[in-house]
Length: 197
Image (tube, rainbow, N blue to C red; front, top):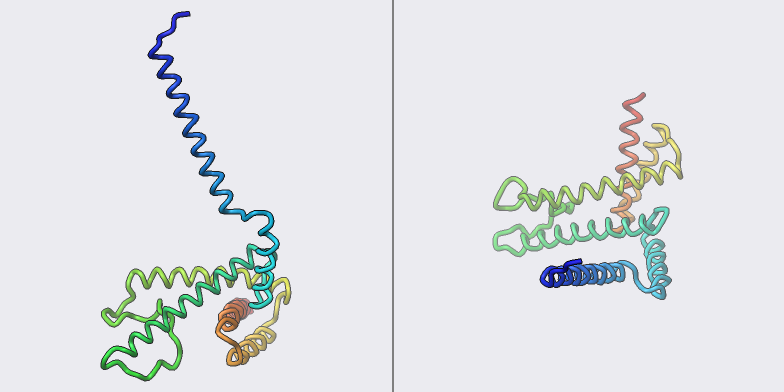
């Protein structure tokens, strides 16, 4: 069988390049998997930390994924609140700015910039992100409340809403965010209930 030396060299080089590329891809994939999963000895500590956060912040959910989503939602809310406070502080420090703080805090995504009347594209994106997370939190809370409370009548919904709103003054900031989601779900149920009656 005739063989061409150049063809053999080219074939060998191509094979080695393919093997090297596959080895590189395999090494990268192995690194990615190691980053995704901590060592086995790290799992108990990680689960213990998640369980402690679940208890400390009264996070619901069936599994760890739900708890982590709740933590992410709370972190997002806290960051939004921090930006709002920073913006209020910046306005208060400006010469000629009113030193009287606003009566109710306004999220940064809803506060128009002094230079324009409408929100900037960045503010609109920030608001859309917060709104999306809020709706996702509402969906999770809706499912949990349906399991725990079951369907409620109009009078029960009004009473539950009133009780939740009355409790707001006694809650801390993190609890207010959680309660706001539940109030939104109850208000949505009441809206739907009254439209069907």
